[in-house]
Length: 366
Ligand SMILES: *Cc1c(COP(=O)(O)O)cnc(C)c1O
View 1: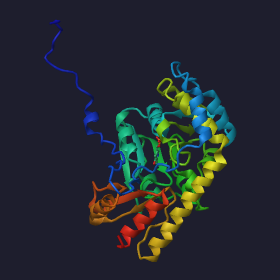
View 2 (view 1 turned 90 degrees about the horizontal axis):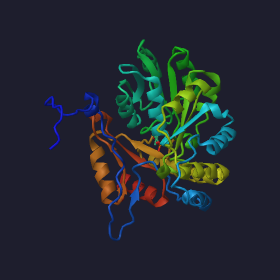
View 3 (view 1 turned 120 degrees about the vertical axis):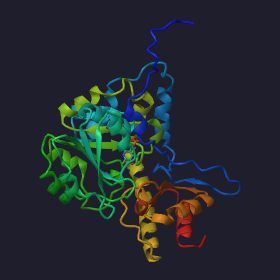
View 4 (view 1 turned 90 degrees about the vertical axis):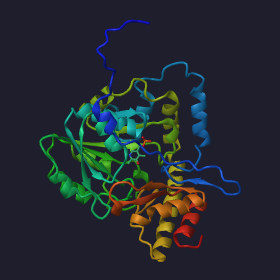
């Protein structure tokens, strides 16, 4: 036995940690003999990576005994040229969820407030809590961001406002007109973070475009993911674009070597083959629009989803819908906790057969 300077106590985590919501990952389908199952629960891209992307990953696989390029310079150069933004305005990290954490770490002191809509992306309350910030959740109005109420919620402790468009899980967008009106009410020292994880799936011409907002407002940052449209969820890589000063602070809080060489190579290859990837996105968008039409025709209001997923606010009936989907081999993402009126189900649009099965379940033919 080693003797220690015992004070009779054991190490305890910060009290906030016990209060953090746990991130509920989308369920994987159990194997079902005789039934093809689908994972429509995580908004992933159903297409396997292009062979050129697999090749690029394979080429660097033999050097994983070495740390990756810490500055991700080739990847950032490719992103800078693709998005027309100087490299110093880009920060990357382990998924856009990782970049979000970097941003909050750079901006939020304990007790500072972060405003965002609710429901929205489940990672927000966790990431804000981790840095000791205070979440100010502003209820959606008709499934959309209530930007007036969000502006009303600004106090002298507000440091960051997150605008998620399209919003996960409701699929609704913020329009550029709404955003411009909102920005007239946001003090310039408050960072407005536009989370555009689903930007490539948007077809509504009125939608806010983060890149345009970035050019226009010095206090805007844009968050982009390579997990959804680019189909690289398993590699964990995302990016933010902001002023050079802000981007430098988002890099300063990064986990060292967080973005692997595999991820860096995959992003560079994905940008080289972006048109093929965007054709896949267009196919998913066509399926989304077909589902919207079919549901509307059978008297179900799907709203106007702009991501790669549908949102069905079923209230009390949500659990039944989840069960019916799972019984039919379709894993979906339930949102059942909290306000019962707000309960609903998020379903990723991907494989045509899964779409057909969903439609059959919803219209009672299955
Ligand atoms: C999926 C998602 C992300 C995070 O994706 P990463 O895989 O971490 O890049 C961020 N924001 C929203 C709204 C999402 O739905």
